[in-house]
Amino acid sequence: MLNVKNLNVAFGGVKALDLHGFSVGMNELRVIIGPNGAGKSTFLDILCGKTQADDGEVVFDGNPILGRKEVDIANLGIARKFQKPSIFGSLTVYDNMLLAARMPKGIFKSMFFKISSELKDRIYQVAKMVRLDIHLSKLAGNLSHGQKQWLEIAIVMLQDPKLLLIDEPAAGMSDEETYRTGELLTDLAKHHCVIVIEHDMSFVEQIANRLVSVLVRGKLLMEGSFAEVRNDQRVIDCYLGRTNTQLE
Ligand SMILES: Nc1ncnc2c1ncn2[C@@H]1O[C@H](COP(=O)(O)OP(=O)(O)OP(=O)(O)O)[C@@H](O)[C@H]1O
Image (tube, rainbow, N blue to C red; front, side, top):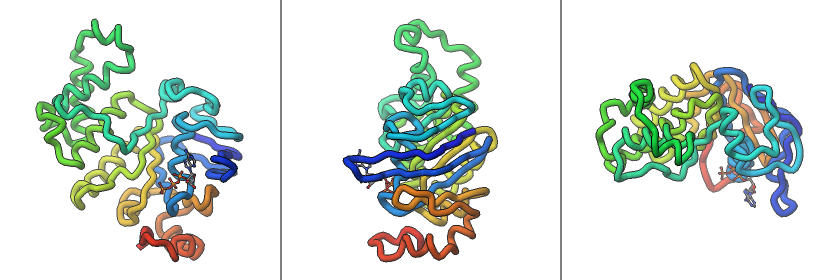
């Protein structure tokens, strides 16, 4: 589904990413970990077209994507869920989802848009998937932090992306919400390809059913199962001596 070769990007002469090879298969949930400044966000920024690479090749579902605009990449089926909130607190969950479902069609088409029963069904299905079906009439501003994040995921899922990119999906969530988010991502990966950047190792352990990729200083240090990565001395070393305790 996604193949990356010799991907390079530098900011002001400082190399942020130098990725020789990286690939993700169909319906795979890939977790990327790495210490601060490893290039994880930069990588997702490149995949969604927010940042342009200096060099390299990225092929998604048979299409080269480097140099394309964000909107073209989104149309090819890559969606990014940013950490920055994008929901409207004064609208209901349903209306937020309806607005998101209409948005890609353009403002003029949206103005004359008729809400079909298929669209209502789709909104209900996606809301159910993110466990918000019983909260559709609630104001989004009154949702818990975790529920707001699920609504953001729902909004992205309404685009029916083939590849979903998510930065730290469980950040700031309660333990229960974190666990449910793990279940949600695992469900999503049954029909979509998902790349998750994550720092919380217990969450990584919950969701990593195949490979975990470790980025360090812009390079891929290793890939392996959660247990392989967790016990790899190079991985342990690259987290040691840091002010954070991300690998604990
Ligand atoms: N727009 C930018 N301009 C200049 N330097 C940048 C820019 N974006 C990222 N960098 C630098 O690129 C490197 C990789 O940053 P990036 O944010 O991708 O790392 P990260 O692994 O996502 O880190 P974190 O876990 O802290 O979010 C860092 O040295 C960072 O300072």
